[in-house]
Length: 192
Length: 304
Image (cartoon, rainbow over the protein chains, first blue to last red):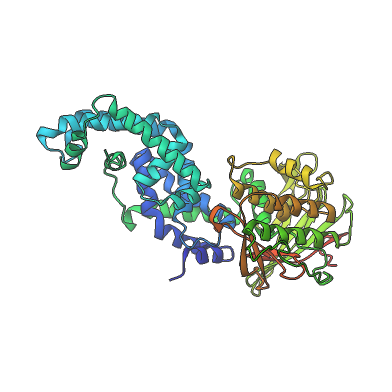
């Protein structure tokens, strides 16, 4: 199978073959957008992400066989243009975490009150991170990108990825510690 | 406390969609791609034009007269002392010093405002020729020859803030759209390495400490403008001072010409510029493009 960079290079002469890039990565990019902006906005923005990529394909670094980090970077830029939608999504989830345990079916009755309040705190902490820190944290925690992939996606040095991640984690931990630093929260969350 | 795992739990329950569920988005993408290729809304066109030119010239301008380049052997790493291997940066800087010296051996032609910069580049099987207006106000042309076809793409000049609209690969002078002239030659670029570095820093778009972004700026200047020998030399000298330089040995440009690659990346992952191993003349970018010819000509369609 041709790698992504070969397909993208070919698409300079045969533009239609760029659809292959969509077929390979759209489901992951869509899920990322849905996690950050909600399903409805994600449905709208996934095509926009790939159209932007199509326009920018001449600038694609041919030494990167996997286009997904690059696509995550473009999607992250679009998320940045929908900051209000993102915060709305987090507020919504905060409310869901507080009121509707059934959205998290793994919850057990005896643990879910604590777990839900924990989620509410975490979601609030996410919403309060600076955009750059949040991008790095979520690309690593949710999308499981490596530091190098995040660096490539956001065109920042790996050192910056590390420092942003550290800062984001510190803030998240502080937000949790403000109520109860006990580690049983985590046990309850993961067991529950 | 594993805070990362806790954040992971928050990602919600968004599923990975199946092909069918993504079909509407795919349809929108294909429609958008079609509009891009065949001319979307007029407002989008000037941007698209610039982008396409930039892509064509990705490798940057080589030298006027690659054939005339004198083989000036530059001894690599003469400062090797006591068997110590010099830092990669020193070696890369030597190549760029060589490129600056090679630039100064080129003929110095100052283009007139009414002339055109002719450039011939190759990317794989596709040969591209362009005639770009020196001051950006005259109508230029892009000719792409992939395999057997010849595609001509007019590049309307920008006069008094208006440029003719292109439709279906033809210019329609009756219809115009707003524009900003894009000169192929900037007469006031610095000829001194310090001033050039200041210029790069002043126009810098990346994050602090990101030398990769600065490397891209060097590349963009090289790729989008006609540079006279002194300016070109100053650019290579300024480039040699950017931290994070690495040598990528045994690479080839877009026409398969072998050379030494120079990259500005943390971990060498960015696209590298290719220089001739002996003369250190700039050739193109790794694997994607090669600059074959650059010249100043009087008319569109004229070759040197």
